[in-house]
Length: 345
Image 1 (cartoon, rainbow, N blue to C red):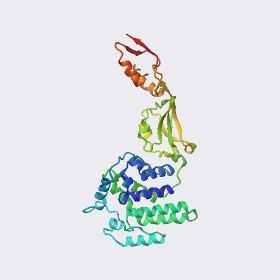
Image 2: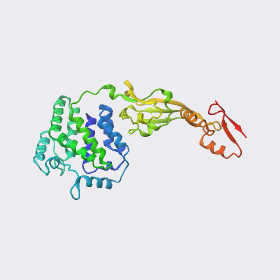
Image 3: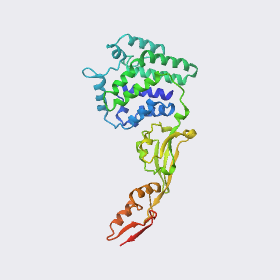
Image 4: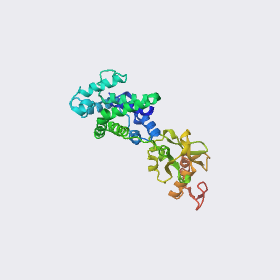
């Protein structure tokens, strides 16, 4: 529940006056980090979708982020969306719900700090974060705090925040659309009867099957929103590695693998390891200078698709040198290995 509390807190900050971290790219946001943890620990589909949506958000000056915020929520003029429960549900500020919430917070030993009203979306999300944190840190009172959260969702947050989230998502704003969708999805998940997460769902991780099908092309690494996948190279070999703790099981890698080599499968105890090697291949050596080039796995598939082009075995520097030799052509003998070449005049 600590990760859940962090996610509620980050959502609260995102819906208050834009914090400094909102100016960075999506993957640098605390909201992104918290969504990764919740997705990995609970299998939350809301968090998984948010990770994918936030991964591609570029940075933007904070002044422009705040301009987006004003256009949606504060004006000048009539704001497009209301961030206060009383205004959103009843059409006016400082309604009965405002004072009901103030009393509710006080009963839990809390006070709203600053000039914000108790029924602002960010304050209600901060209260949910507090309840989740207390549930995790006070095991003797966990059931009571969990019941309080359910009642709060049923009577307040769950009655308007999912609608607000969907409205934000429908606004078309590139930054706030994924935030709104996460708000709607997360609150709907919290309101539905929870069932214990199945261990096989939580351990669905990328696996290379069969191993030989993976060419180490790296496209799966490029689309991974959490950088759970990585290509590592030494002088001797190239490896595709996975950090299970960073994987949310979003499936982007599986969808982009054109060789049908990478699949999400149950991995048992793999999540206890810091890294898992999914594929390894020795690196090919330039036949002229002996320096390592690409992996043999990648060279094999490129060679087959391009009918073993003459330049393939060589490093970039030797290719340039060979191209400068006047009147000399090279070809690969039929059936030869990529490094077995002959000169033809």
